[in-house]
Length: 429
Ligand SMILES: C[S@@+](CC[C@H](N)C(=O)[O-])C[C@H]1O[C@@H](n2cnc3c(N)ncnc32)[C@H](O)[C@@H]1O
Image (cartoon, rainbow, N blue to C red; front, side):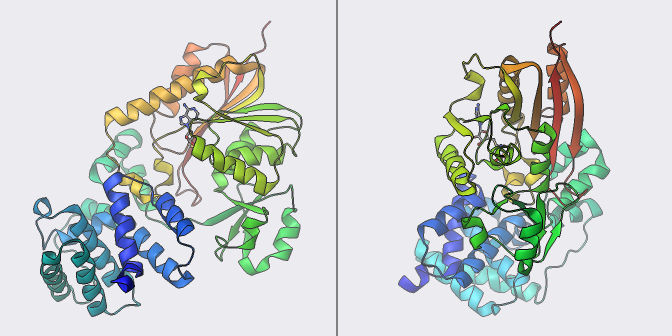
């Protein structure tokens, strides 16, 4: 039993249960787990990561094939999860023979309930008999195939199609299933981009067409010494672009209303060359601690942290510039966090987010000096959170001018999807 508890599949099963039962984010669950279990070998870590991430990424497809053999309404979620992850290993990973996958699934389920071993064994053997080599679709239409292949819930697809058209929704679905690039920001507080490229060519780096300080790596940098030394921050190119749109200058006083985990805050600091001051707020203390850790690692010394609901800031400061990078539905980062697709998105959840964003925007308006610049951004595709939100904001505050607005879709440059608008408060006459 001790052996089983250390097995990557048993670990993956438990992490997947946690993610699916409590709507948690896989990157957070995986990071926390590995931080608390540093004795796991790199090889086992990779397998756990592959099974967890691959099962989530392909959940709708795996569920579709499992349903041919079980009645999901009568099968507990945890047994379905075990079947999904077993099918993922059988048809997407080629390292392990099928009998080993079946045996281990049976042993895993026995730790939950001895009596269910036969059921899991039977289902998996039927699946292998029907699909000896690969999972094949029969008799389904193009739309259903697209949704299954990209594990896109039909309701979410229709939501995108209603707002942006069917063609765009199809691109969103396909992009949501791609593998994101390894994009990193060179911390020019410590090293220049040119020097970095020369010194670390083993990561097979290429420059970015989107940001001068971004590089794309072919080799993984996740466990590298570069992170520990604060030479890089793992950041999507579009996330960097948003900071560049705000265009922070040395010695300015800048407000960052929703700063955690600190990707944009520390980039602001970098572009200001550690001068001036950034007031960085976040409502969540644990997440704000991460901003502190990242700032320390990157050598950013012009950041003051405040744990508070930023829509309730009481201050006389009139900021030169404000970044309002609000909490949002996050549909632009589905290829990094595929579980976003399966959250129970209803009008209530989305309306709540829109209300929070509106309050943050209203506070930003109060705290922006005349002539000052505000950048509002989300990492999502949803007009209510994006262009409609800003239209209403501008309508309510006629002294604001829209300087720039953009909805970026992830397929355009294999980046995360983002929306931003750059707004200026007119000088009083
Ligand atoms: C999109 S994330 C920010 C990402 C960050 N700007 C970056 O680039 O690393 C949104 C953040 O807003 C925080 N948040 C949510 N509601 C808030 C509020 N009312 N006031 C301040 N922060 C809030 C969340 O805790 C979360 O960390």
